[in-house]
Image (cartoon, rainbow, N blue to C red; front, side, top):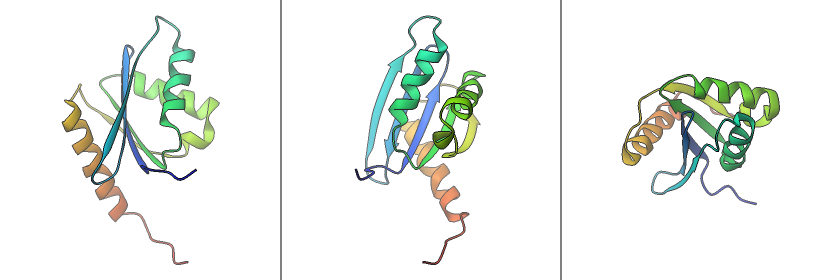
Length: 117
């Protein structure tokens, strides 16, 4: 299965998560709400929604993004290895979130050493 969008940005807090899988010209939103106090189920659903993203940026206003990162390390180590950064931010608008992700990955991609094949 081909990866349609390599990059993903996740905004998460204890009540909701918004994931954008995006390219330079396109973005697809996957939004979900937390189901009460069942963090493991909520985090599992968020991890599944991240799917095959090749590079992931975690964002959010408080500790939930860090708890989710720890969940990934413990339960989805391959996916955890694709997390390229963690940034604190209040809830931006959807266009602001996508713009932040595009800017972040453009800068990150420029600083990534290229491997000759």
